[in-house]
View 1 (spheres, rainbow, N blue to C red):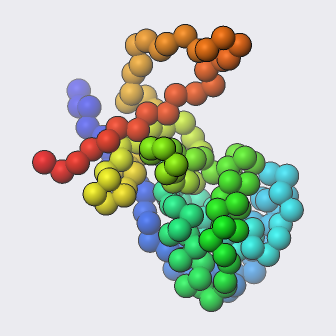
View 2 (view 1 turned 180 degrees about the vertical axis):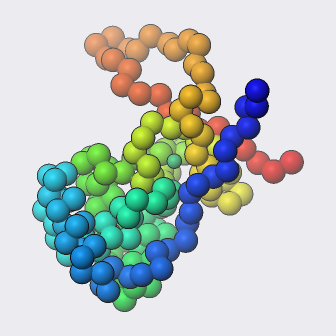
Length: 157
Ligand SMILES: [Zn+2]
């Protein structure tokens, strides 16, 4: 039996087609946002077109801002960050906290864990069933544990 982690399916490559050229996708994304309880503003729809096309990606607000600006749209970094947080609160994205005050947003909202390689600021998915936790501490008084996300820090030998 092998414990090998399957190859990383995540890509950081921008989509081949820009959202402004895909009205059908824009309509689909607008309804996806509505279903998630978010008003489909132009900026939210543009960001959804870039991020929520079904591919698994890990991205920072900064990188996404650069990607959006490359499409000719201009959205301020703070707005992108707020939108990513709204998507996360609505369950459309997952936040992966790498260390204090630094997180990436994950378009794969299924339960899974990550390797993090600081040298390339890269997250690599680990299927949930490949991490076994045999013991967890008691949650603080009046608290329940709602999830455990493992980030294993790696660097090239
Ligand atoms: Zn992931």
